[in-house]
Length: 442
Image (cartoon, rainbow, N blue to C red):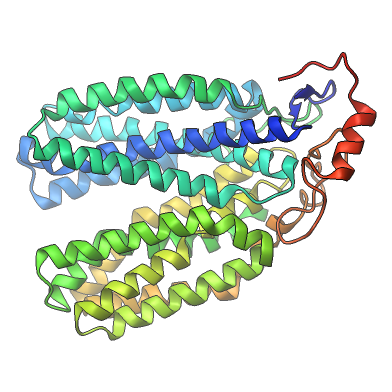
């Protein structure tokens, strides 16, 4: 892996360097997801330990989303100033450490403060990791963002499973989360050290201290908003829907969330191959069609056998929407982390309001009507998919093109086209011409 003397970041000029960079950032996503999954598995204990009512618990669980929304716009400036590798390392390490805070809270106000800090670290680390992923994707010329988010889902599922086993064995959550925080912190260090040191071009303008979403990212953010709304509604309300609308038992109702989570994780892991074959826009339209079909099945369901496959289809449909939104945002302007922060702020705000909107509509009418709105937003993915066209090409006009996989300087065309990628003959020839025996290796 050689270093670009002009802009600073390493060039992924060999198949081995590209593979190592991709694995390193994927593992960082897995660590991030594992922190989230570990915390979620112990929410029932926190509620019981502090004797929280459902309303009080709901208030506490809004705090991570508020912390993320407030802190994410700061991440672009951090990445620009110190580089992606250093920022991911610091923020992911802090996120691992905040995992131990919620179970130590002695009261609801302290819990809210702990979750506010937890959410802030989660959001900023998320932006920095996605900025790293977008840069690596552009330099190797092949879609990887869906797989990265699949690793996040996988990390969350594995950690949640471990948490459930720990709860079944009556392990003290304070001990469990402290040990988990230290283990994940230790794992994060070599994972982050192995990532390329992505930095903004020297001529790029430094983002403001608190970067509002760029206007050019709003359409992309709205597409992500629709996908995350369907995701958040399904995660929080699928079990209640099966119990109240279809008359399912608590055990069967829990299967709806399992079906949704598993299909989303598997779809994300397989999504890059689909995106590479059909392109970002067609993949988004296909996703919208599948999610809409799932929503219609849920709305029409009068028994669990129909609703569970419906939630599974929604999981498949929304799986690649957020990865594609981040990939598209990363091609706006000279500072991809700023655009990603803007899209993340718009997108994750959806996760903040979705549960409340679904609950409010259900209170005023019914859960069936609520998921009719979810279905309509899923259909909106079909209409808005064109906003993700940036994910199929280089940086938008007015910004700098991504550095190519080889030091030849040609920006890759991205998923959906067939440009040479790392390791193919055209790239190997460029590497041979421009890299000599004295080039430093990474």
